[in-house]
Amino acid sequence: MHLLQVVSALVAPPLCAACGRGCRAGAVLCTRCSRRLATATPVLTAGPQGIDRAWSSAPHDDVARALVGALKFRHLLPVAELMADRIEWLAPGHLLGGAAVPVPAAPGRLRRRGFDPAGELASALAAKLGTEVSACLVRRGPGHQRGRGRAERIRHPPRIESVAPAPRSVLLIDDVLTTGATLTACASALRPAGAKRIVALTFTRRL
Ligand SMILES: [Zn+2]
Image (cartoon, rainbow, N blue to C red; front, side, top):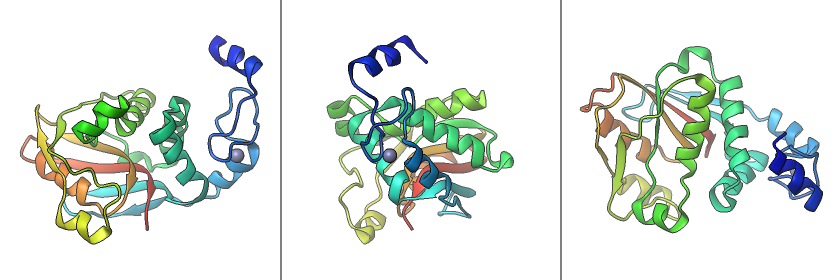
């Protein structure tokens, strides 16, 4: 355990990132939430368009969903670690080759928050897999997808461009897979930049 965690555990008891109840020092989740997360079934599919395989560690529900919120809105970095652990443990090994490319955040959103969930997850996962992070994509213009309906997300995908050569084999990383429109926009930018194989890995998937 880090010294900082010891000190903060003395000041305030650690709280479960999902349910907010007290939990063991150094733990992200309480025992109950940890058990519930362990029962979530990963989802593996072909596509969306442009993506060879898409794998998510859990449906966007219950404890997994609460963790996405904790990373996005409360910036709890240990949550990114826990998400990366779960992806590394559960994803089939043949999917895990390549460099990690985070799905880029909308520029205004990143400026306001100063925090990028997909980027944090990509860094944590790349460190575990011993691979590199290639931040070769940027998102232009307005158009974050959150708060938009499903049909609108598909009709108006975000504008995504490559700003550097893409790795040949890409692990495209995001916290949540919703319609797949964002992943498809990323693939359209990655292929001309040199990507031959694109596997999308997300923590949750809205079904
Ligand atoms: Zn809990």
